[in-house]
Length: 169
Length: 219
Image (cartoon, rainbow over all chains, first blue to last red; front, side, top):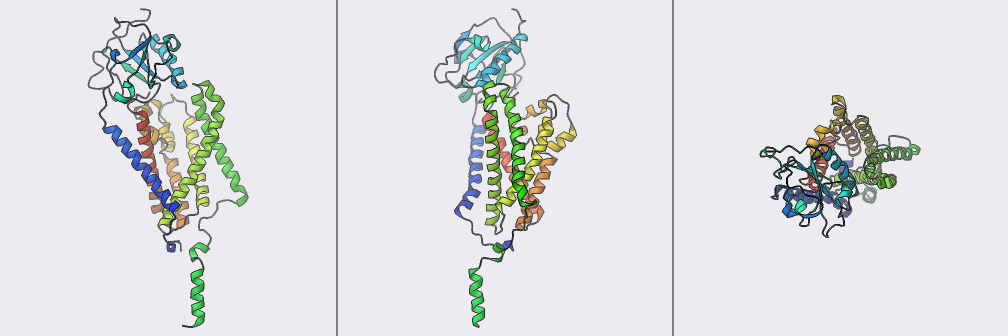
């Protein structure tokens, strides 16, 4: 009867049992720390970023799409022009925000990404203050710079949303 | 004490316990010569699915299309290692509780159960992204078959528990039966163990997805 086997588990066996438990403990702790850390609500404030290219339009009072791009990420670099074209058809201003780049990125031409403005997040605000992590994500900000959706949205942030200007302005 | 009795007692000490001598109660489900072919069919099925998933990424980045077949091969090897690791974990668990689970035989049963996952994935893939809700598909294949808009509302949970459907439940029952037959425990015990392990690993996956996503917006 197999029940009669001695409880003789080798070191490898105990290691095999303990390893997943340890991994779960580490993962759970990391998740808990991440969830309980107070993050700043994402707001589009240009004084926190460095302008690399494009042209500003101080008179624009509409929704703004901000795409987080990383020059080493081919997926988000390919996706940005597609999103920019979609936004332009809706008359919405599009911004590319270069994230996770310690040195000033070599991207000096906003035309490459077909965006209206190109900014560099030199202080790591996107990752370390806002807690965002996915390259290529699209953040929609209203005219006051408040995020329209995602975990930072809410508390009536969509109120006061200015209509985007018509295309061909 | 009669010398015959002493001799018999000493001999019994030298011999391995009866349970170690006997043939494992979990039998190979097919004849020996067909077993490698089953593994090949399993590998080919997962390679095809992995390649299809990777080609979706390659549609965005053309240079990735060149390495996709190799990446799919690595994914299959990683899955094979995962099956062996899962089997070894259960073997260690039962060994600690005084029962023997033959790793390779059990891994073969896990592999057969994994073929059901392939069917569930194909069932989801056969449905267009913008197709309306199909209750029977969701019941069989899990939340992965939900319309894209619904899945994106809860990307972390939908990502981790995408396959929680009747087909997955069937796979649990299959591997729990194999485990129960091997260690001679009631099905309810092994089913509870398999379900609990699945739940814990998928909660861990949800935590990992949540960590990777951070507060980023998923569309």
